[in-house]
Image 1 (cartoon, one colour):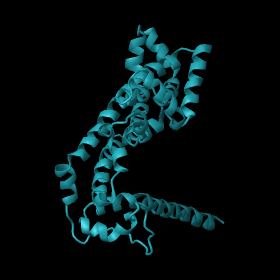
Image 2 (cartoon, rainbow, N blue to C red; image 1 turned 30 degrees about the vertical axis):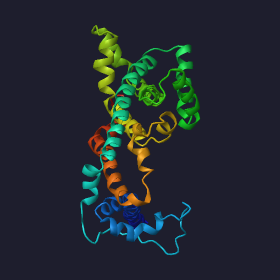
Image 3 (cartoon, rainbow, N blue to C red; image 1 turned 90 degrees about the vertical axis):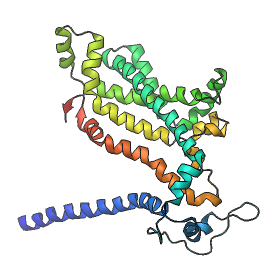
Length: 298
C-alpha cells in the first residue's frame, strides 16, 4: 500500500509539471510568434500571411482557400521593420508617447487618491462610509462599457471632450484601486496602530510611516494591474476623443491596414515592452502583495 502511494506521489508532480509546461508554451507562442515575425522582411510577411489580410475590390474580406502556416523562424533576419517604425514613420512613436502620457498620470494619481480614501475607509467606520464603500463596490462590478455614456455626458458638460482630461479624470477616480487598497489596510493589525498612537504618532504619521509601508506590496500590485488595464484601453479614446492624433497606440494598432501588416509585428513588440518590463520589475512586489496581508505573513 505504501509503495502504491509513493508511486502516486511521484506521478502527480510530474503530470502537474507537464501540464504547466504545455500551458506555458501555449501562452508564450503568440509572443514568440510576434517577435520572430517582426524580424521578417515585408515580402516574407506578405507571402506567409498576405492571404489572411487581403481584401477584395469592394473592400470586403477574401475567402482563404488554403491553410495558413504559422512561421516562427524567418528565412532572413532583418531589422528593417524597426527602422521604419522608429525612424521613417514617426506617427507610431507619437502614438506610443500618447499612451505613456495617458497611462502614467492615471496610475500615479489613482494610487494617490486611493491611498487617502482607503485610509479613511479602513481607519474610521460608520454607516455613511459603509454606504459609500458599498457604492464603490457596485461601480467596480460594472463593466466600463456601461459607464461610457455617463462619462461622455459628464465630459461634455465639463467641456473636456477631445482633451486629455476626458481620459485622465475617469481613470484617476476609478474605484478599483480604492477597493483593493482598503482591503489591504483593513488587514493591518489594530495593535500596531494602537502602539503608534501610544508613542504619540498622529494620523499623518500613522498613514505615511505605518500603513503605506505595510501596503507596499499591495500598492505595487495595484499599480501593475492599473497600468496594464489602461495601457490596453480602446473604448475610452474612441468615444471621448474624436481627434485621431490624440489616440493612443492601442487604438492605432487596430487601424493598421493590409499594406502595413509587416509593420504591425514590430509595433506590437514595441507596444509589449513597457508592460513586460513593469511586470518583471514588480514581480517580487506582486508576490509580496499576494503572500502578505497587511504586513502579516500568511
